[in-house]
Image (cartoon, rainbow, N blue to C red; front, top):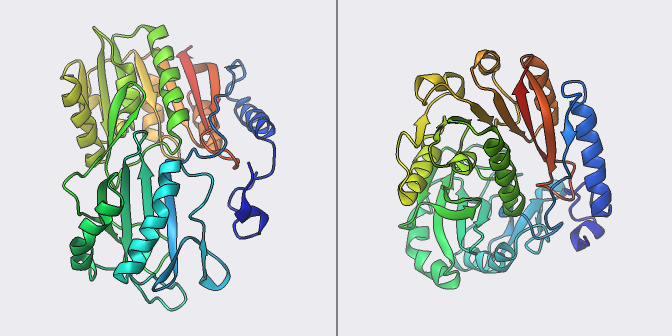
Length: 377
């Protein structure tokens, strides 16, 4: 992949830029296999899953910089100056096409970019997510609610320029800290969720929700999980840290009970929306708000297959202990952090990994996703 920003020294976020993509994947595969070898010595590594090496990111998190009338959308350079990256080749085409319109909109309505050195201004970030359909979710991260009335009054102008914008919201982040978003979200449009048709079911993403950044590779990840689940032929499946339900919907099959648990109420509301759309009701499919370590209190039991997809910190100690004692015979673990995955697998002494697979969600960087399937010893 060629990048004019990297070549000019304007942005060096992609640490592997310039390295042939095949070499990147080979290096990642070797590194993650070595990291997991002590905890998974018998694992059979399936071929790595890859997608496009550019134009793959379905989400852009851009810092607003520059001056009123000449906003930049990208990163901050030395001294807090804005560096415009609206043509970044990592983003999906729908995002790249939208960014000039968003910059023009900000300039036209006179929204002042936030200046880190002086702590003056309102607009901190612009976050854009693209669905496979090309529809968009646009979030303006503001310092305060002072511009809410202005943004509401100018919303028709934005939607006229970007009719593919399905969701538009304001996120309020008042802290003078390196935090992208705050706790308060103000949705300006009638629709509050972006429909992401990735995998076997239409998933709904809210502004504060999490979704895999690479839609193409995410679909392959769900497909692999589905294959491992079907091979186990379970009666009951638990999806812990289920988010909006990607793995849970991949597990659905006639005569099978599937339960998902997630701490975020918004994610569960999105999962239930998909369930209703597909006509799936308990006991075939159940979603509950709660702590993954206490899933037995709310989900159908006992499970034959357990799926875990925790944040980078890995599994909580309580859940590790419960998994070792659980009646399940198959465990599927999807991780974006090989270090915590290796740690957790070493602690799960009642399980042995049989297969593993690298999913390259993040070309041009050394980050990746890896999924393993383990069986009870």
